[in-house]
Image (tube, rainbow, N blue to C red; front, side, top):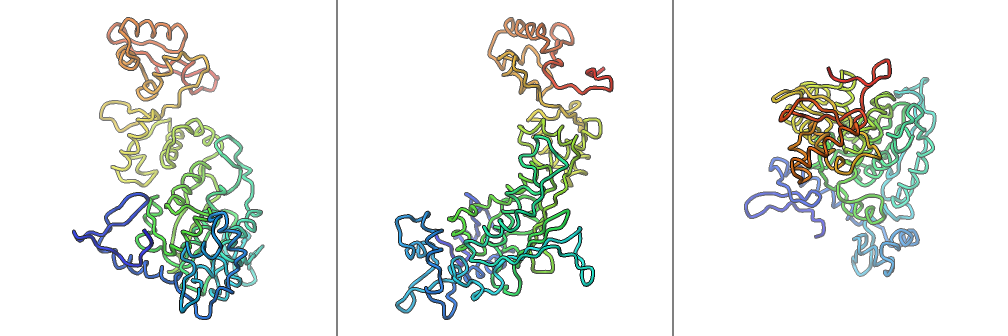
Amino acid sequence: MDWSPDVHQLADSRYLLRVHDRNSPFPAHQIAALKSAKGQGLLERSFPPGASMKDLDLDLALEWLGPVWPQLPVEDALRRHDLMAARNGHFVPTLAALLLFGREPARWHPRCGIDFVRWDGIKREHGAELNITKRIRIEAPLATLIRNAREAIQPFIRERQQLHDLFFTEKLEYPTFVWQEAIVNAVAHRDYSLQGAPIEVWMYDDRMEIRSPGLPPAPVTIEALNRRERVHFSRNPLLVRTLAALQYMRDLGEGIPRMFDEMDRAGCYPPRFDVVGGFVFQVTLRNEPIYDRQTVAWLSKFADLRLSGDQKRVLAYAHAHGDRFTSRDYQKVIGDEIYAASKSIKDMIRKGVVRSTGKGSRVYVVQEPLAAHPDIPADLVRLLPIVQRLGRLTNADVVKALGVSRPTATRLLNEWLDGQWLRKEGRKRWTVYYPADRLMHQPHNASGKPEHDA
């Protein structure tokens, strides 16, 4: 279904918003804002007076759209994307087409480029103290503007020198996907009705700010973005659809959640979304890591468990406080209310990262992942999720998980005791088996010997 400037109401008086692959109820009090945002989408579909097909660089359009529509003449490819239409007996380009493939985009929008500024230090100075060390004005049709911006800014992204462990997938101060996605979003979603300001990329010693003219279009809000909610709406659907076809982006609302994930994996603070000056949408990326090298190395042990950034931050807090934390600690560190904290902690328990210290207790102990020893018996490997989650095994656990008889379970447990994979406590029906040093990472004391619970 093509984009529509109208907001449609169902027969039962509900409004639905399409988000990713679902229809979600839309609050009635935001309908006016949504109608206004959809109205802005008409701008890119407008036909600027005096514009003709001669104002398009058809060779550039063929270069970019040819791989998308290899069997079509370039004019037909442009029509497929609603970038041109017949008016008064001849074809004319839309504003979106002129911005994407125009010979002189600035003729139709005087500030449709990107200004890059490198500031010396961590704040902006003026007058005699002006601290600009580099300024680049990047102007080009939008089809090449993003690529040109990447190439111009990339040399200023420094290598990260303070962290060298395998927790990082790249040793750059900003993950490549994150800063490039912020620029793509700025180009795709800026308010092109505001012609007095360009997109700006300001780089300081400690952060990068990507500033885009225009407020987020309803129903997207700053609060929802900072909460990592998957909310997607295009102010410029023609531009978004074409940039997605050119493989700059995916028109599925996936970019911002992935920005959070990439910053989490790099051990950096999450991106921050704000409105500055009343009409500028700003993305702030901080390059300083959240954790020191030792903490990052310790967190890397949990890399395969798909923990969220909030969960990693709580683990880091617990690691600095005796490898334990409370529900109140979680709320204090993350800023969540009790129900969100409880849900996240339950997920950590399910993954075997933490365990409760007792029934009804809100004190949780961190459990490091079990060692991946190459000689571990195959049947015991199948039981590791139980050991990780509960911190121990019983005969009944083995019977249920492996589908064996009680005598067979007892024989297996004795074999694992002999192999020093497990250690036993209790007698007869109260016998419990705990992971031994060979199976489990053990904290070490100053003498270098493993420490055991008393």
